[in-house]
Amino acid sequence: MSRRLLFLIGYRGAGKTEVARLLAPLLGWQWIDADAVLEERFGKSIRQIFAEEGEPSFRNKEAAILQELSQLQDHVVATGGGVVLRPDNRAALQRGHVVWLQAPSDVLWQRMRSDASTAERRPNLAQGGIAEIEAMLSVRTPLYEECQDLIVDTSKGNPALAAEVIRDWLTSRAHSSCP
Ligand code: S3P
Image (cartoon, rainbow, N blue to C red; front, top):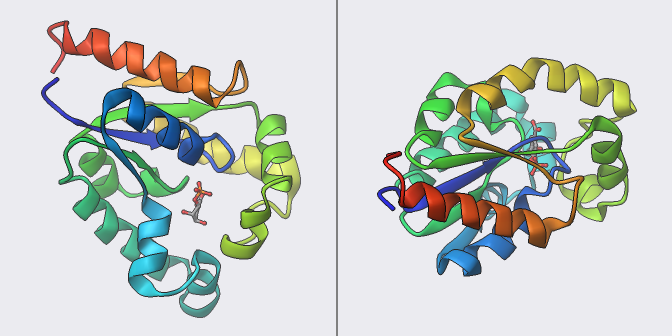
């Protein structure tokens, strides 16, 4: 396997962190959550950064952290849902394999509502409910599409199954001529 780095991308609620946690041991790699690295580095929750400094400041921090994480080897990286918005970030993602975790907007909405960390740590991206998620997805879907090497629908099965599907895909990729 030439690139021993894999990024999970997709909207909030798609299952990136959970799948990263389950996938890494299947590959014998480590996993890391880009948002958690950012919060630890800057000593503030993402919600605080949005509130005190604004979204552009958060996006600058996110881009800097991604540049660092894209140098890692033997890692699965769970990214923030908006990481694909900047062209430089999309280029950095190409240093690894990129898997787009998807789920229908109503499933994303249900998951976001039942995730306690959403309210505490993240800005209120979904006060507008499913309609707002769909509006965000209409902007982001072409960007996720542009970056991805594999799409996995996490509304079918469970995170453990998604992790196995990705492991099998990566293993077969390693044995084919794909870079
Ligand atoms: C964001 C998603 C969040 C976090 C930030 C912005 C977004 O990550 O990076 O609140 O723009 O979709 P998750 O996808 O892990 O919630």
